[in-house]
Length: 327
Image (cartoon, rainbow, N blue to C red):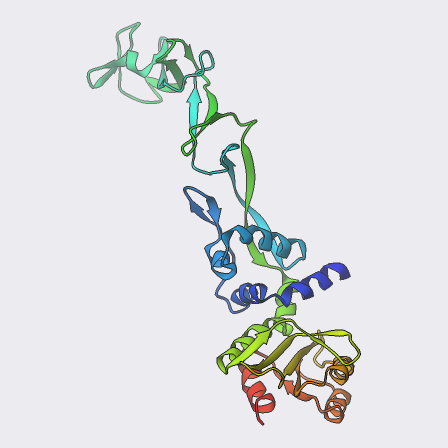
């Protein structure tokens, strides 16, 4: 994965809808996101529809997550849509190649092995028996007396016969007939979380969702990401900003410090101090996943940043409430 892709993923992780979806993979609720067929709309993703609220936004979200390397995809199916009304409520018609009517009759071809006579099954049928029209012998053993030699079609409109019909589509909604060349033919995918995204989410980005929900349950108005303007006039971004409902100030700012190693470095502490020095929030909390370096701990204490160390969702809420929610 390129650095640009990683930066793009980190930006997406700050979106609440992305956090909710990714958390379903991380928790094991989802191992693979498969589409569900809808007669009118084609394939849909009900889990994602419920998260975004507007089903028309689902495909855009999944595409952006795939392009950023958060999700990987596999071809699940292909589907035909009407070029006029964009519905998937489409049927297949097999048509006569001569007059284009779909009023055709399909028959099985049978070959009498001994005499070589070939005709439709209807010509061989005598009551409940098969009898060769040429030599009059009864055929009783498939593969010995006779075998199926293919299919034969007859058009009920023009009366002509043929072996291969012409496929066409019919829209059940707007009643348009259209060919494959005119159709909207689209890929449908199943999705799963990439190893990179699983690792990154486990490192902490997905912890934003339970923290946000916890704060909201405690009566806070929450923004994630949150932007605050400082004394300098510059706008600073925090992973979460929260304030009691109806209170103009009394703002808590929260950032995450994650590391692919066992210990997060002091750099996130320094970066957060630069922001809070300009913004002057009531409280600043830094959540280190899984733990902060000794230098980082000393700097956090010096800068009056409340430090939380945690390894998983359950622990982060417990420690966050103990460290950051006490007066």
